[in-house]
Length: 162
Image (cartoon, rainbow, N blue to C red; front, side, top):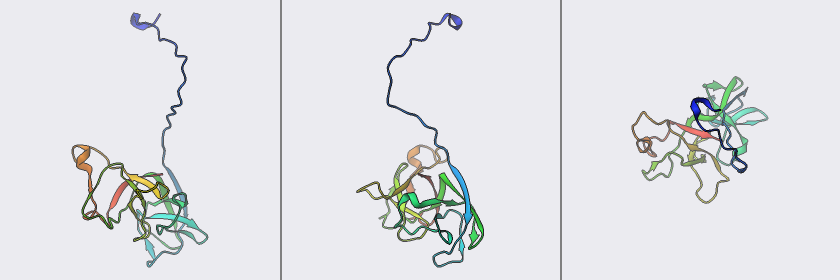
């Protein structure tokens, strides 16, 4: 007999193809390699792992090449901690025309600024590395979390990195 006289659960014999998985981030460390045009790399930079160590992405990589986003500023040869999952990384806002970036908008690696993200390729998802994923509540309704592409260029934005 069920608690409080409630009916017993009805057995289910159907199966579904739906699978729910909890998505976790990850943290990894590696040495920083050489950088494009600078001797330091700031926190929030998207990096890939090469023979010389971690270097900034340049927009032409396969999204699978992304090692993570740096947590702290570092110099070439120092140990860096990177994370994947929900991160904050630099946004370039190039060719935006003053539009707004809505939550869930796909993003890809920037060709203009090494280690940054830009708007995703609408013709295909092969370039996509993640999507704009703001934290709700601080600005009111979810629509209030829209990001101005021109005024937020160069700022760290919340991204769900694949």
